[in-house]
Length: 419
Image 1: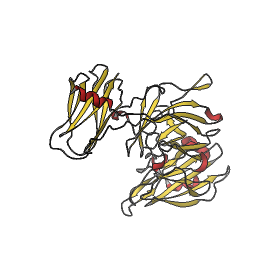
Image 2 (image 1 turned 120 degrees about the vertical axis):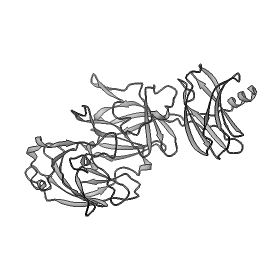
Image 3 (image 1 turned 180 degrees about the horizontal axis):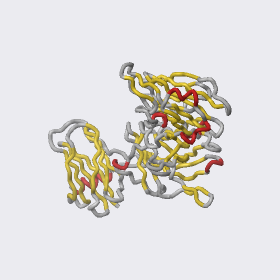
């Protein structure tokens, strides 16, 4: 038995891909927003001034998504009035009475223009027509001299809205348009430019980006006393990946987080991977991030290596695929399994296993010392499918162990190292 266990240990397979350094050119003054995809190492760069509003695509004519502003280009949104007629008489000198609205930096589905005082942020539901009808007047402030007023008048399979520009003395003529809700779209948002009066392509299709490097607004105050502030950082695509932040050193051997450590909050990476100290940007050595692909479970690790600030807008990070192998399939093709992190620093590991067929017997996973002594055992499901299970082996001493998964009459083994 010992011989078989040691032979299985010698057949253990596992690897981490070579790391690569990635340079992201945001440009002077952070002129660009850059979308990045790990699996293809591709970047999509767009000028941050190319769009103003983003309308979320949702399924169904009556289902309505959120409306976000492009705070990356410095737009500040305000609610001016909850009376539609006040749109005609907006006075930019009265802005001390306006209420500032911001995009959420934790959830893409919470936009500034959907957080106004109406039930739906900008409007109320009409139970007769089944439309949402506008009630709130907004102003978008670009600078001390440039303003645009916006009124979303209707939603029914698309957003109908009008807007005008303040030229310093008077409002321009209104422009009215409709941005259709694109059911089944491969992009989460439809983007619109108030400068060109037309829809624009900004983000790649959802499957083609994992995170975007951009400026955005965060709250440096409290819920009761908010202090909106523009920061430069990273937001991730929560339709494609979840992210875990760790205090690992980036140059150390990867140690994958447990499943529970991964978050959907889009600012998990955020902006605080850098700080400004004594006139220069400083990057801590103990901020490392893991991004897990929702569809296929692949995992990439990144840590930042430089940030130049607004002079060039250039930043660099180190990226690598740290997806653990899932072990060796048995000769009958019935089981695939693996564990991560391996080695484990604290004895907490996650078991991944794929059962091709149902079995009648109870399935077990056991841990043996190299002398053949069983030191841990637990049961797992006997139903076919792909599963993960967290195991707490922190009571075991540091060393080499053999992990055995048994499903019916089929057995698989793999080496496990606890440091």
